Amino acid sequence: MKQKLSIIKIGGNVIENQTELGKFLTNFSKLSGAKILVHGGGKLATQLASKLGIESKMVNGRRVTDAESLKVITMVYGGLTNKNIVAKLQALGTNAIGLSGADGDAIQAHKRPLKEIDYGFVGDVDGINDKTISTLLHADLVPVFCAMTHDGNGQLLNTNADTIASEIAIGMSSQFETTLYYCFEKKGVLRDITNEDSVVKHINSKIYKELLDSKIIADGMLPKLENCFHALDKNVDQVCIGDVSMIDSETLLYTTITK
Image 1 (cartoon, one colour):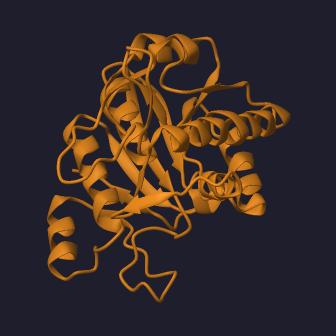
Image 2 (cartoon, rainbow, N blue to C red):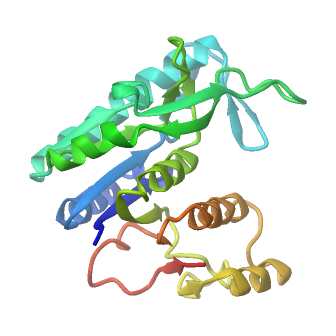
């Protein structure tokens, strides 16, 4: 029987709110079994870039990462944000270790090919090093990954944190029974965006199609749900979406997604 593994991704709205971050990390530290945390950098990278006189460019909600922006992202994602989270987890008794995809060759990627838009130093994941990650987990360490990968030729790459979490869950599914959690500011997938409690508690392929057809799932939730079903198609056991209380064992209001 496979050991259970929880992979939790937190978004910028959690990272930037110290109260919510503290609540989440307390819940995360109490979560039993093997676990991995994945985070982005929120708006802090944009704010620091502005202070340094570096323009932040966004296209279709995604950051264009030129050479100067990459320096800022490395400082914020791999440095300030990652190490603050690791330090807070250590204070909570969780033996966390902060990582980028380059550490231990954990996550390999390639620079996104130039098509209509040049995203610069943005990476698309090729694979993960399950041997490195499982070695850390079996040593009772808790990996905390920032949203950066590498190409194997010395180049760091800015990479979507949702995708990193999904690919880690997929890559570890041969060794572990994996559950992927996307933790953000809402309680789950909502039937009515104006009603915080209108959570769709369970989604499968059939319900997903109905929600798409009725336009309940739209806009920013579309790529998140696409990531979810991609992970399920690649042997991840289940995916959950909710707010910071989702991983608290007493919380029942969040969305669970299965095939």
